[in-house]
Length: 341
Image 1 (tube, rainbow, N blue to C red):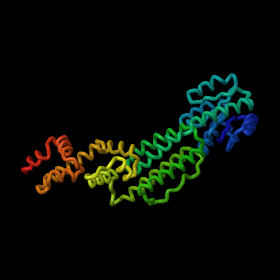
Image 2 (cartoon, rainbow, N blue to C red):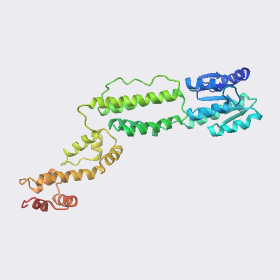
Image 3 (cartoon, rainbow, N blue to C red):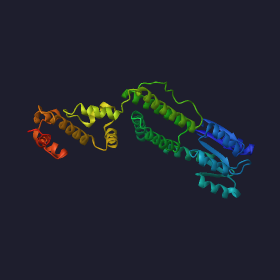
Image 4 (cartoon, rainbow, N blue to C red):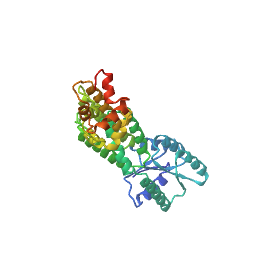
């Protein structure tokens, strides 16, 4: 964790630094600011995890500083220090998400207890493994399908989720670096070829910069995929439909087609229904019947052979299904075409 201490009195400021230095969990860095304005400029530069601020300071006090952070850096944990006569100001910070107040004079024991409460809160805010894996899987799928609107919504939702998770800047950088690598490997397994070099997330001191760079990597992979398919682009759903059409005589399963297309069965099923308005099974049945109608229009084809050509070895079952879909038996359909059976 990185700590920023804001207090306009040098003696108190140095005392708070010494107390923080003796905390059982060593801070990655401890920085100081002489007032709220100075603190805000430092926060914009390196974005600390914890802010310890006096409530009354010249050139932007602690209350105004808390308001600024609530709007721009809501994940930073804030500890407000106030005197007895100033506590009413500290209470106003409730509206800005401040949960920790210390009355002067601050002791090392109380300050360390407050740090402990923050550490405990941060541990509760860690991103769950299950949601993280789902997030990676969904981003990879949306890139592969070139569903840019859905991808943008997913990135917006997860930006807010990660900002609220209480992660430190180094933790977030590691998480996003891992995410880029996992998404890249998933795309490669589906046939993605790297057009431009996908670099790791660079070193930054502010979460906003890390998230922006991660999104640039995602957009870069999406653009690479468009370039890879350009001039010979075929929507993955079209590939799936083509596969179904060329295997109408076989009993292919949803799991088989999903694996062929590089999707999980659950995602593929939902995606297929969303994109076609029909389930995989119903779509395949209708395609079989459409093909059967084409074959029934060929006078030399026996109906039993038509049934076999579209995957029905059981002739009565084919007749029943054909009538259910078209409203006519195969024989009736041929009669409508001017044939005699």
